[in-house]
Length: 308
Image (cartoon, rainbow, N blue to C red; front, side, top):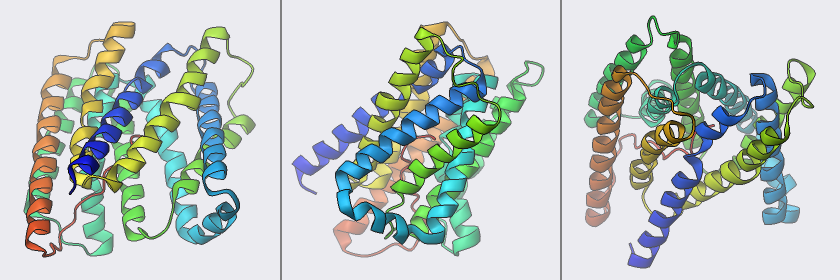
C-alpha cells in the first residue's frame, strides 16, 4: 500500500468518525417528540443523499437503482427499521449504552454470515463475540431498576439489524446499495408523516439542530466512511470507527451533563477493548495475507458506514 493512499484512507475515516460523533448529542438537544425527530432526521438525510447521488451518477442513477433488485429492497427495509430503533434507543437509555452496544455490529455480522452464508468464522471472532456479549450483559444489567433496559435492548436489536445489513452487503458486494439506504430514510419519513409525526411542531432551535444533523453531520460522515475502505483495509476502518463509542458519550456529557452508570463504563471497556483487539488482529492477518499473496477463507466483517 502506498503511503499516500494509507494517509488518505486514515484521514477519511478519522474525519468521518469526528463528523459522526455529535449525532447522539444533537438528538439529545432536539426537544421535538420522538416521531417528529425521526421524521425530519430521515427526510433531510434521505433527501440530501438522493441529491448527492443524482449529482454524482447523473444519468446512470436509474440503472443503478434497478440493478439493486430484491437485495436493494431488503436493505431498504432493514435500514429503515434500524434507524427507527436507533433513535428510540438513544432517547430511552444513555448515549454511551447505545453506542457501546451498537459498536458490536461487525461481530454479529460475522455470526450471521456463518449462519446464513456458510462462511467460516475465525477463532478470534468467536472469542470476540463471547467477550462482547459479556460486556453487553453488564451494560444491560446496570439498567435494571434504572429504567434504561428497554433502550439497551433496542440498541442490541439495532446492532443485529445493522449486522444483517452488513451481511447482505457482503453477499452482494458487486452491487451499489447506497440508493437503498437513501430509500430507507425516505420510507421512514413517509410512514412517520402518515402516522405519529407532527412535522410543524418544531421550534427555531430544533430547526437548527435538525439541519445540522440531517444535512451536514450524517451525509458527510457516511460519505467519508464509505470512501475510506477504498484506501485502507476494512479492519483498519473498523478500528478507527471504535472512536465513536468514546467520542459520542463525551459530547453528550459536555453538552447536557449526562453521566452513565459505572456498569456502562465496565461493560463498555470490555466491549471496546475486545473490538480494538479484534480489529488489530484482523488488520495484522490481512497484512500477512497480502504479503504472502495468499487468501484466508474466514469472515472479515466489512467496516460499518457508521450507525443508522
